[in-house]
Each structure stands twice: as C-alpha cells, then as structure tokens.
Length: 153
Image 1 (tube, rainbow, N blue to C red):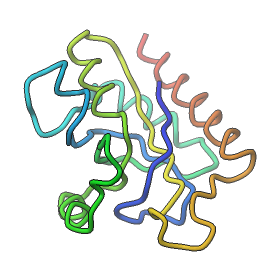
Image 2 (image 1 turned 60 degrees about the vertical axis):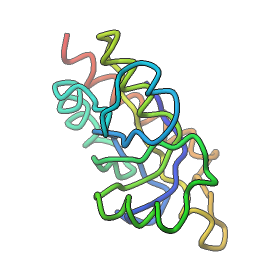
Image 3 (image 1 turned 90 degrees about the horizontal axis):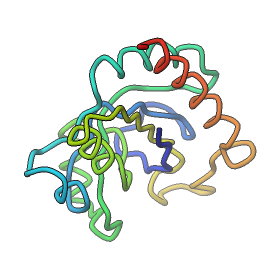
C-alpha cells in the first residue's frame, strides 16, 4: 500500500484530501522498465471496488480517479498540466504508475493513494497536510483500505 503526497490538477475539494488511484498516466520513469509501453497503469478492479467501499467510512474525503506519474517535477509545465486536465486527471505524483505496473507484472495486489496536499505552489500556505502533517488522516485511510483488502480473502 502506498500513500504519496501529490499536487492537485483538477480540484475535487480544498486540500488536503485523498484520491484512490484507479489508474496512473505513465509519463517517464520506472514503470517502462517493467512492461512495454501503455498509456496507463491500473489497479486491480476487484481490489479497487473493495477498497472504495471500505473508504466510505473515512473522515477525510477519499475520491477515486486518475493521476499523472512523473519522476521530474520540472516537467510539470502549464502545457503538460493542461493536457492532464483534458484527460480528467485529478493529481500529479511520483510513484503510482511504477507500483501498479510492477503489481501487474508480478501478479501482486497494490493499492495507491494520492494525498492531495497542495495546489502546486499556487496559494499561500500550500503544502499544508493537516494535523500531524497528515499522518493521522493517512493512517485512517490505510486502516480502511486494509479492511477492504482483507474482505477479498
């Protein structure tokens, strides 16, 4: 299970909040070392459904959607951000595509969450993660997701 800090592309709420990543746009990076090129890396659909249901009990919002995985924040240009928005991408992060691609190749379950903590440096006090730097909220999401994951067994 992965929870990564991420930047908001399409606003779903005021940060901080979470996105259960259904699919991650494979930009550059590690995911291309595991599997031939495809545009997105996806979570297992049964796992996603079970985790979504369990996350309905979490006090912070948990949305479901797509992210853009890039290993190079300097490539987060206005043009690239606009392209991501046009594809309905909610956030940008640095690892979900690699983890989901690895999961598919190794046939192992992986769940990735984007902890949307900022608007990419566009507002005052950006990068505010919440109480205890968002640790408590992240642990609540992890606990709920674990419950959903275990329900599959």
